[in-house]
Length: 181
Image (cartoon, rainbow, N blue to C red):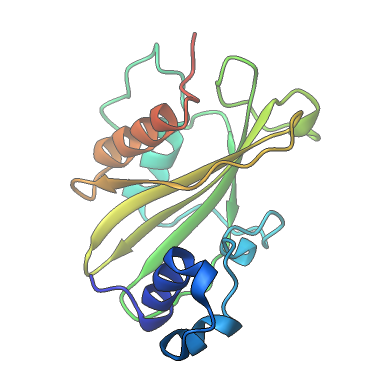
């Protein structure tokens, strides 16, 4: 997958931020050098759970208790995620957005009226499937320190429930937010 023109210019501008007077970097003047927060909306519209059984099962299993092995067929796990809607950016691309809350042990909380009351971290994520492959993207906000991580991207090897769950768990590990129970 080739990056689009804006991504290339953004990388050049970030690298050469001190030399923006150069005429070749004139397009940089209109670009923001910080991550675009709209790409990770905190209050995106809620959406129904994914209709795709692999996506829904993988998301549920990826936030389930790690001490329990993933069942061989879909079950009705406790609700741990709020699904978010993301507009499609191009044809043949599916984006499943989600948000979940973690306790002090890094374990996903079951959703209640106010999950943030018992949470220490909130996770935003996207499960993306397009012609170039599939991937999970996660980032977290510490609710006490108000810090936000950079996004972590993990490829999904095959489009099935177990591979999606494994990619989510790897992304959580890379963020240092694996469930420690």
